[in-house]
Amino acid sequence: MNSRTFIAKRVADELADGQIVNLGIGIPTMVPKFVGEDKKIIFQSENGIINIGPTPPLGQDNPNIYDAGGAPATVKPGGQFVDSATAFGLIRSGKVDVTVLGAVQVDEAGNLANWNIPNKMLVGFGGAMDLVTCAKNVIVAMEHTAKGTIKIMKECSFPLTGSKCVTKIITELAVFNVTPEGLVLEEITSKTNLDEVKEKTEADYQVSPNLKINHID
Ligand SMILES: CC(C)(COP(=O)(O)OP(=O)(O)OC[C@H]1O[C@@H](n2cnc3c(N)ncnc32)[C@H](O)[C@@H]1OP(=O)(O)O)[C@@H](O)C(=O)NCCC(=O)NCCSC(=O)CCC(=O)O
Image (cartoon, rainbow, N blue to C red; front, side, top):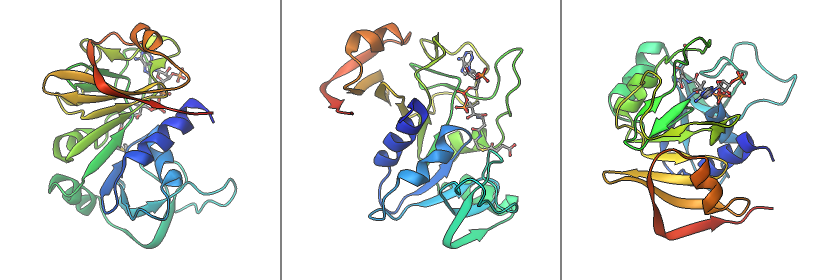
């Protein structure tokens, strides 16, 4: 399992039965594949799909069904298509329990940068500003570093999408909670150690006294 797949699976474990969950661009769109039948989660995609399902197998995509990132998607039985005003009405009225977003940087205050890297083409923030403002929880799902470049910063250097909005950061190495006192390292995988996490994280953080080791093969 590669890093991105592992992160999506770990995010799926974090979600609870009955939640309404919005999925942003990148790793978040892989999350539905890893949610078992025991949990009834309504995934919302801001482009107007309620109850979006897993990515279809290669070659079986419906050209009319796309996720927020423009990739082929599926709709679960009972799902609906709504217009943009309704999709954003759902977000802005505070009905989204969790939004899962990709990021280029996040910092120890819970600030999020996910739409701009100077001199690099990204999609833009789309609905991310509405999502970070209105969703009850904001989970960042991203690789711990960008090919070695630090992404968990003391203070974001790229333009922000939202300030003090992130509640949890999930990477292939670790899980941090964002608290009023700063970042708390809650979990590391058995493939890493505290030294590696420290080396790849610029932000200061506390290590939880209940630090969990996520054992992976
Ligand atoms: C933040 C990203 C880009 C993350 O997506 P990914 O995980 O696929 O990207 P990634 O592979 O991590 O990063 C993309 C490229 O940037 C580089 N990169 C990433 N972080 C970096 C950093 N801190 N410093 C330098 N480079 C960095 C990577 O190495 C990679 O380079 P290479 O290319 O060289 O490999 C995405 O989530 C995004 O675009 N978000 C903004 C919009 C959003 O989330 N909206 C939410 C609602 S959906 C929506 O808004 C719909 C939009 C619409 O309809 O218009």
